[in-house]
Image (cartoon, rainbow, N blue to C red):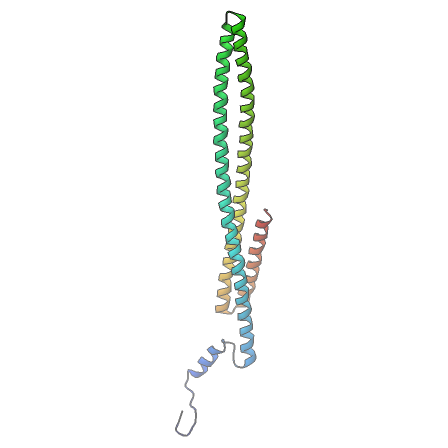
Length: 202
């Protein structure tokens, strides 16, 4: 400012004004348009981040379920193994009872051993049924674990793609490249689609 009230522009004043207007040139219309695009990208980024957080939570939940179901399968396999060991013990006792029955010298003893043989045979059938039931349960828990793990991978893929979309949004804001903005929307849509596949167990 001079002593007579004249304002003298420095060589950098124009550049500062240009930067303050978002690099789009002079005038309110240009500045308003720039803010509109920036605001739109910012809102979309917030929405994508929220969806990504939900996908990340679902990914963690399905991974925890997969581990829990795998643990249940292991428990059932152990219980089934115990039942088969019990079955083997009964088979051994039955074989010994059959040997004693066949070598008995009188009918009373032979009948007594036959009663034990019949009982062991019945007990073996019950134990075998219980063991097979436990094995079937283990197979179902394993299948549920695999399904949850597959779903976890889908949620993780969806979350990763949305994170890429957010990165593209940041670059689009910095560079103001239209193609990056379009790429951001496309990648976000792909991430949401993968999330939908996860929700549908596909």
